[in-house]
Image 1 (cartoon, rainbow, N blue to C red):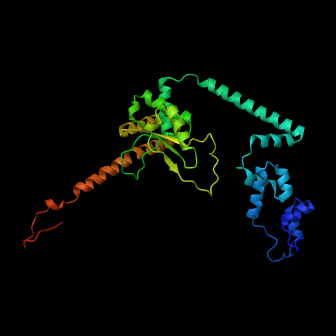
Image 2: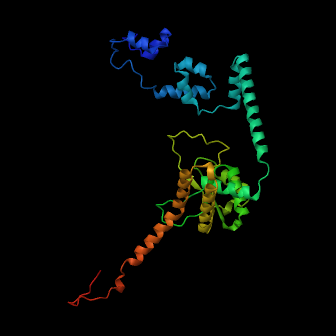
Image 3: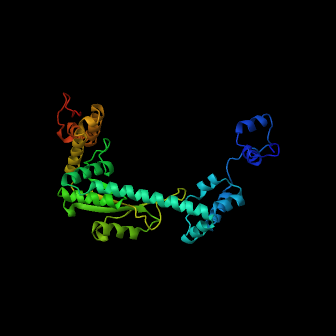
Amino acid sequence: MRRLGATRAEIARALGMKDNGTLSWWLRGIEAPPGAGVRYGYHDQVRARAVALRREGRPYREIMEVLGVPKSTLSNWLKDVALTAEQQKILSQSRPDGVRRRAEAIRSRRIAEQERVKAEARAEIGGLSDRELFIAGVVAYWAEGAKAKPWRDRSPRVKFINSDPTMIMLFLHWLDSIGIEPDRLTFRVHIHETADVGGALRFWADLVGVAPSTFLRTTLKRHNPTTSRRNTGEGYVGCLTIEVRRSTHLYRQIAGWYEGVVESLGRGVSRRAREALVLQVRVRVLAPQRQHDARQERLFERPMPYLIRARSADGNVARA
């Protein structure tokens, strides 16, 4: 079989062998024909055929028999191929009754356990005090919000972007709790250009309670056909950015509040780790301002042409 061009994997399947060491010992010194013996991958036509069969609602078992491709390879090829509800129903009915009932029972138990744990955890939270909401908002912003960079020479602003509507509502409630007026907020949608841009805009506008016409121009991400995206379908609405106007002072307050949270951990965190966290916060706040101040100092230290009027001994104008 090796001399006829079969690969080691094909020989092992044909003989029902699982020990590659034994097979390698047997085939030692046996050369395969030129161009045979190694498979670097399947032809694109094979993959396209597998996708077409899956879209017809064929089960993996049938596709494996037709194309001779391992199930692991099929799983990688077909993981993003969506089936209609009718096709899923047919595939479910084609399974043996015992297998189907067992799979449904396992799935039901998993969902019930998931809901039970979530309900118990939700009950542990209860209502939030003003202080708890305040701390939650500070931590949420430092995790998800825009932060100043040491290499950017501009005043930091409060900007929060997220795809989770509940995080957006948490941030809006937090802004309201610290006295930020709604007229200081701007909204912008970020979304792939192939998605339902109008529907996403209406979704976010309804969520935050403002007219879609008040939103800034939508930022569209160009479609790359070579990538495999999973954030598609009717439920995909992109991300929403909330920016607070005139928010440099607020940003510095948030950085200080978060620094206070870190320092309050006390013995729960080692002194070295706590100092590292505080230093990181201060770098994100102070470094851009220091760069700006240094640039201003260099600007004013530079001699201005109209101030240079000193003449040398020969009467020529001396330039610095």
